[in-house]
Image 1 (cartoon, rainbow, N blue to C red):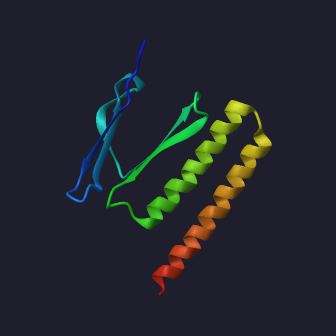
Image 2 (image 1 turned 30 degrees about the vertical axis):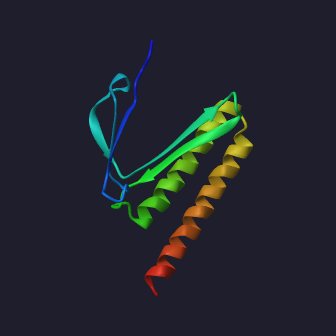
Length: 114
C-alpha cells in the first residue's frame, strides 16, 4: 500500500515561494491546507546523509519563524524519544528549544527597538 503527501509551491518571478499548500488524503487531510513554511528532512540510508528542503513564503514573519523553529525542535525531541527511548537527551533538546525561543525573542525585540 502506498500513501501520498502532496506539496505544492507557487513561486514568484524571483523564484521565491509565494504560496505553499499541502494535503494528505490518506491521512485525513483531503483538502489543500495553506502553510507559510516547510522543513522537510529525508534520510538516505545508503549514503548515510540527510537531505533537506527548507522553504518559507515572503509572508513568513520573523516571530513566526522563531515559533516554528521552537515547535519543530520540541517535536523533534518527542520523535527522538519515541525512536530511541533516550528521554534524557530528548529533554536536553527541549531545554535547548526553550533557550532558543528566549534568545530569538530577545534578538527580535532588540532589532525592533533600533
